[in-house]
Length: 130
Image (cartoon, rainbow, N blue to C red; front, side, top):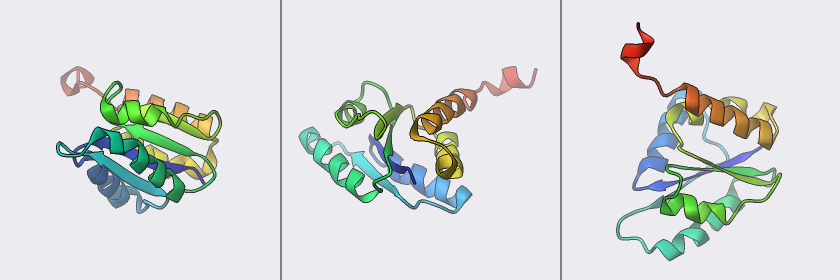
């Protein structure tokens, strides 16, 4: 089963995991890694490495909050074709999608599904209702 490491600023990763677990009933094989204001940025890579060790050996996705941010930049060092992929811009619908589909898709298929879900879940309600 594909593992998940959510790497974000502040407490977002923990909150996203808690919310998606409430909806899907699952957070197995998932770890939060967070960068807080008083954390040294150079320790982030080591914490991501430790989290990857605990989420399983069938490949993993690292979801980060913002492309180009420190969590995303640190996660990029773990890219490994067919084993570890990084998806940025994580939101709650993407988390629910991950837990709902991860046992039925390859790593590549799951990443494509997460990207599509993330894009489709951001709407302007007023325009949607027209």
